Length: 497
Image 1: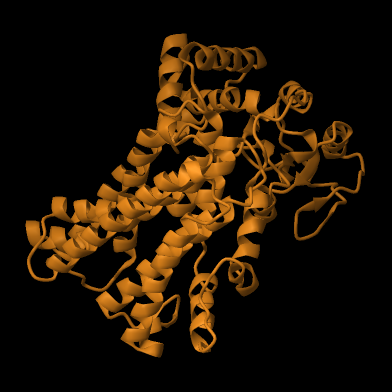
Image 2: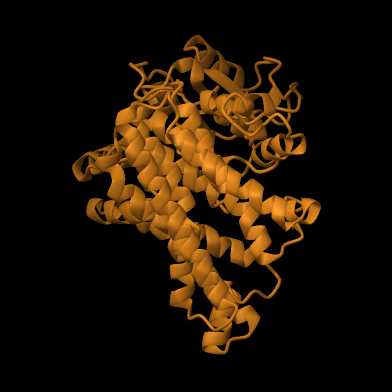
């Protein structure tokens, strides 16, 4: 859905719009398409469908919306009506006579009878579907994050649908869009038949468990001093400060992305929203490894701050920081052999964690050499594959092993983690305004003799390519639950969506 006026045209006649809708459904079925599709992929499919059907090119964006609807409709059926949201725009009201008031969410209909918002809201509520009248709302994102809302039926203009698509798609939120028939934001109209059909979609057996809220709650509870104390062996009769520092290293600051990934992929592959007891030490081990690597990385780079606070070695000295990092590594491996972890998966868990640990160290070694000699861009990217990707890969692998699905998905997860890790590090380089010999920006500056602005432009293009490649890898995944989960991971890690 490119922002070009000629492509944003809504077919003028209802029969034409209904025809596009039917053609889009047939196209999805004929080509075996699965959601989510990246924007570029959706555009390509829409362009091909328009050409095949002989439609005017200016209908391309409308066709893209209908293809997206056709992709998501089967999945929306598996979501309870109580977890669906009808989002209506302000511009449906009669601006001259509207008597509604507003709150922080949106319009509070007074049911004055001057427009049909009350009627549409009543139809949704009769079907057990939540209603919100607003152009957009941060609350919608919060509801989706908490799993209170798992799907959206949105009535909006083409321009607003364009703006909403990246966020909805990156979070893999099933959605049906009903375009307004014209822009202008005054007394707008849309195809009521399409809305009625969307509201009437039956409620089928859930396809996948709404695990997001459960995972978030479990991770939040685990990474507290009381939560980790149950599993750690960080104390002796004579230690006073050490256990506290270990707990703080694990619990304070950071977003605990990697534990979320391990728990989330387990739930996605096991199709459950419940975390078994044996998974908890595995999740905790992932964070032990990650926080140890950060402590050691801060020492190696002689960094003063992390998360806006003094680094551990600045506060307590290098020897103590080294010891805490070493302890966390040891605890990580011990936790993978925890008595609650099934014996038949312990060896694989330990082997994959050790492999990732070694690769990370090799990547760090290559980065050190960058301080002594110039690295080419290719060498820099290989360093990122070794240094950054393993942290994502081990989080994915351990969850898949725990779910008994590692062999089935290993190759796909490896390619995905490698691409995601490099994209994430390139994004980090672009945010760093200080010279850094190990940064891709500095490497390409020296290799090609570029000014910093030109180097930044080149790395921005390279990052966009890796980001696109990461999403493209997901198109090969045929398990819709796994694909949805990885889309959400990518959208969170690569935040520029």
